[in-house]
Structure formats: C-alpha cells, structure tokens
Length: 281
Image 1 (cartoon, rainbow, N blue to C red):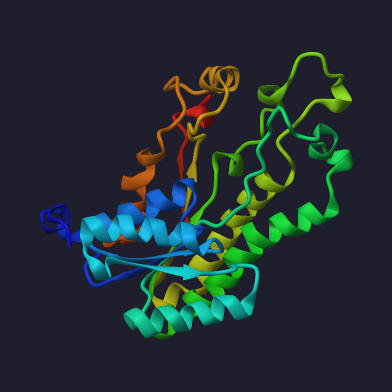
Image 2: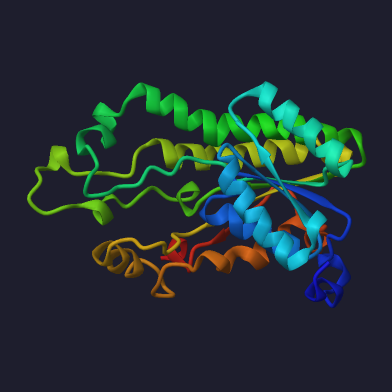
C-alpha cells in the first residue's frame, strides 16, 4: 500500500478491495486504475489489448507493490470472455468489490475521416452495432457477471463512465471544416451520445434493482479531455466551457476515488457531471 493511502480518511481507504476497470489501458482507464491503486485497491486492468494492459500494470506495481495490480484480457462484448475474466480474478484475488465500466469506442472526428459516414444519413449499421456492443452491451454484461457475483457476496460498487454528452447533444459546430458543403461536414456520430445517455438508464436500473444487495451504482460524466487535439478544436471547445479549458486526464481521479469508496456511502443511482461547467451554460 502506498504511503498516501495510509494517511487518507478512512472512508476513502480501499485496502483489501479489488477493483476491475474495463478498457483499463485507455486514456481515462489508466487514470481510474491509478486513482484506485492510490487509495489501496488491488486493481485489475481489463482490456482487449493485453500488452497495453500489462504495461500499465507494471507501472502500478512499481508504485504500489507486486500484488497491487494484474492485467486481464477481456472482450466485454462476449459473455464467455466476461465469465472467464471473473473466474481469473477470483482465482488471483479471491473476490471483486468494485467494477468500473469504462470500455467504449469514442469515434474521433479527424481530417482523415470519411466525412460522409460520420453523418446520420450514411452512418454504417455495422458501426452502430459494434459501438453499442462495446459501450452498452459490454457494461451490461460486466454488470451482470461481476455485479451478479458481488450481489451474492455482500455487495460492492459499480461506476459507469458516461460523458457530458449524456446530458446534452454534441455541438456539431465544433467539427466544421472550411471548404466542405453542409452534407459533407464531419460530425460526432450518433452512437456516442446515445450510448452514454443509455448508461445513465442502466445506472438507475441497477441501483434500484440491487438496492437490497448492498450494491451502489453511480455514473461519472467527464467533459472533454485534452489529448493532443488540434489547436482550432481546442479553442472552439474551450470557449464553451466556463472554466475556459479542457480537462487534464488526471483531473477525474478524485471523483473516481469518491464514487468507488465509502466516502459516497449515501449515494446511488446518480450521475456526477464534471465538465468544467459546460452544461451550466
């Protein structure tokens, strides 16, 4: 356990707890894993990309000890993979106490996009199914399997990672490019806000379904995270945010610690929006 964890207020202490983070080697998944390891949890970085997960596990172990983390190859779209993942975690740690449903496909709007296919009229059906499989069906399956185990073994916490696009629609003006006609302008695809909004429904459903099983379920809706986007896009988005900037990737750590620990013991079925104030404007 880290020295930081030893001095935290008891409600934030996850010592002896096991936390599974899906999509754990992604931009925010890594941050969630480090946040929970920081307060004493043994973290499982579950990802379809096992080498990337193993790289992040090595970093956490370097800071918090050999048994502080493990990598798990997990395809959240397949029930057999999720069930096998639970068995692997139980075999290694003996239990699961926290599930962070973070796995998602975030379709980016770039200069190289085939702009016609990002628009609703031409959005590929296979992409609709694929992205819903990862972001929504994956959260359902992991909740069913890992949450089901927790319901039978004293309870736990589920945290669904949604988005500020769960509470408002994408502002497609952010993605406009000069020289293109209206019907060829790239847009944020329909799938992402639909999935993130649906996660709020799943959050409320699970919170009330498992209320007697001592399982608390909440959602976190982060705003845009700076990760090397183009200067024009960053400027446009920053003007829509009262704090005047995009988030750093590590700025959600404290919220994850709060929502996954007993510090939030009287909170369930809720969505915490951290968007720099954008939804207030």
